[in-house]
Length: 245
Image (cartoon, rainbow, N blue to C red; front, side, top):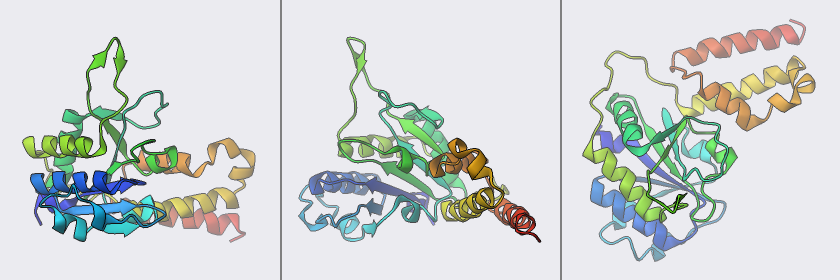
């Protein structure tokens, strides 16, 4: 499988069909095909007039009802952010540095990367960002000391994809264990949360038990796929003991 087939562009709560069409056109122009749209209602993609020559990308776009399901098969999930006034809970990388790391993951035979873009008005929410391993931002000029808040959705996708094809990763590490997919991490997260409840931790320390906070904690562990069964076994043993053996 080519590297371009291991990258998926995920649009979360994108509302304007023409913006989605512009994203599809950028993907077509730079050789990417896999578009996933997360929304709680159906977006009329057939009205995306801006998808010039990218009808195949639009036609094959898949629709999802949650970020978790849309990225479940991905080993690296990267969110995009204009930063602004947001208090970040993730590592943040400028696009050139981020592109190198994404290229390295795509160079792995089993690596699959999800690149998340939020809605045109609000970007990605904190809950949506909690599914990300880290964030990237596009460096932009400041005017009178103030950074422009964001780019148009289609422009942002085009800039990110251009940077990926301009400097493809050359650091794919052969023999390195496959990273855990997001779906595997979610299953571990569910068991981990169950363990916290069974041991009474959630009652004693409720401020530390927000689902998004725990997800970020698990993601920072940087789990390999082979780590997940080990951690699942540990958690199940703790659950067994907490429930009286």
